[in-house]
Image (cartoon, rainbow, N blue to C red; front, side, top):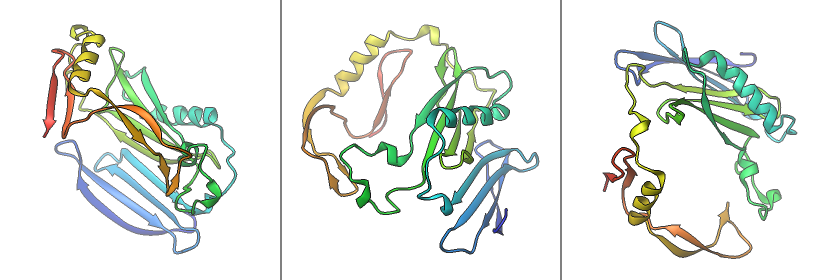
Length: 229
């Protein structure tokens, strides 16, 4: 931890019953190029659950690592954390914030805070019967200026949990019709905006009408389940 001082250690309850987490943090005293590291481990075993690195000195530097290279580095890093017997995962890529900006955005007008570090995020979801398990994932963030892993987190599901059998699900077409019944498409005008910069013109789009609350379609019975009103 060159140039950083140890800040503190903190204990907290884990998402697994009976376990505790221990977090350690380090930071620099340089206000111009701040550095900060947080490491979260499982008490007793020392297993790493998450790592976060902030290094302001990389801001504004040239991007040297391509998406393909960053993905390869993330895949190599995650190998040692995969659960035993886990051979298949689904990878979801979240490009750096600056790459998500629409073409019409004048990036020269954006502030330093509005143009954060060039970082690509990768989410790895284990597959069960070819279906991603969303409550169990591995997150890796790569700094495109140097190729280093600057963030990692592990959210594992209790291995004793039995997942439903995917062989008994309703057809995807039936689920689609159930969704449209409760969330019909409607025309709407939208005018996109990015940090107070307006798009060139409004768009006319079809959008689902979303009622208040959160719901999902039970894949085994094909019916909408409302979680919150």
